[in-house]
Length: 210
Image 1 (spheres, rainbow, N blue to C red):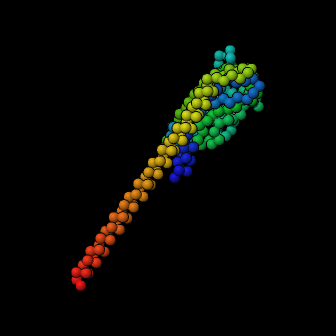
Image 2: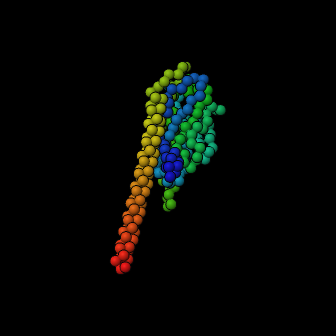
Image 3: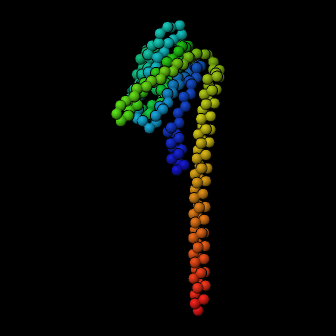
């Protein structure tokens, strides 16, 4: 039972943590984008599109698309530098993150992550979407930003919360099993006393008859 609960928690856990916003030139960088699926019992499909507006530019340009496990780089500035870093299961796509190799100062700007999801019900399909904006600043040397700290705090809070919930479930199950055991013992004791009393009465009746 505990194993089933833990497995269920692992499958259901989804926290929309914000992406880091500071990248270091010459290093790799993860552009985080998570959109949790609210109806976990409903099958769904999703596509993820990424757009980029460089510093000083006025319009977004699509740079990446991911659909049915097929990734397409759509801007030559990112050729051989963008890789999928999100969910592995297309049937439960919630993490649409990508990874940039060899970040340059030209990668500074605003990135837009666009989730388009289709929830499939018995009689119809429900379309929903989510958009997230990430402002990236490329620096020569790493400094720890507030987004990174908040991401770590959210991660630890989520882990601790899930562990506490699991402990509560374990205690509840233990008490329920213990209560059931005590009730069974009381019933057995009562049954034993009833049998003993009946046997005693029978013995008394036999002695009087003699």
